[in-house]
Amino acid sequence: MNVYGLRSAKATIHIDYSLGHPGEIANAVPRGPGRPRSEKARKAVIRSTLALLKRVGFNELTIESVAARAGVGKATVYRWWPNKAELVIACFVSAVGEELRFPSAGPVLNSIHEQMKRWAPIFRSPLGQIVVTVIGAGQSEPEILEAFRAHWVEPRRIEARRLLRQAMKKGEIRADLDPDTVLDLLYGPLYLRLLLKHAPLDEDFVNTVFEVVSPVLSASSTGRQLPFQSVTELADLAKQSSAAHVGTLAKIR
Image (cartoon, rainbow, N blue to C red):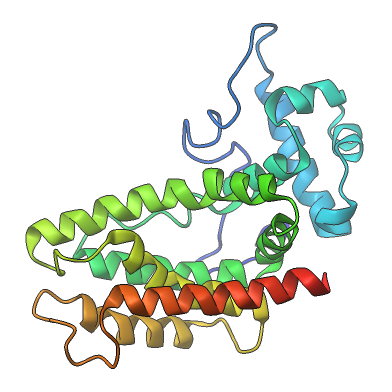
């Protein structure tokens, strides 16, 4: 059990304070000239940020408080992360990035399904509230949302697109689908429940989403049995609905 009391469905999730996979976050902010950064100090900043997020939340978190708790100067923090949002997103990735990698063995859709089941308990934990707050803040501060997409969403999408294209080449899923549309269909409902909290974000829901969407992705499916023109049209409808709900969330923040 970690600082957030977080457990996955199958095993305890270990928080890696080293910022996840090599290059995933270290490259988020280009390193400039000067003294080499201290790995010990970097880990201290990550630990301090996660602890303070648990105690005071995103809105009350300050670079000053993080630096003081970590025993470093503010300039040290800013050398790694240019603002609070990028620091918080980096800490989130360090905590869950390894756990949310796609399994490499077996059919691609099975790997995605397994990753979705890992996604749910993490995002309904206090760590998930960090994501909710960042997305909400990003509605009025676009640079926050851009940082979230760049450092959290896109690295995972790169990996997922590769898997989906691999599945298309193998004939596991339809080759006429846009990988990003497929990901929107699979993960859009999860983000909706994360943001609105109108119903449980649990494994049963994950399984339902996968069972509804996966037959549409099958190489033997033409999509003609669906009550809409195409998978893309369904994704567009889902995006419109999600955007409307997020806009409402931003207004009541």
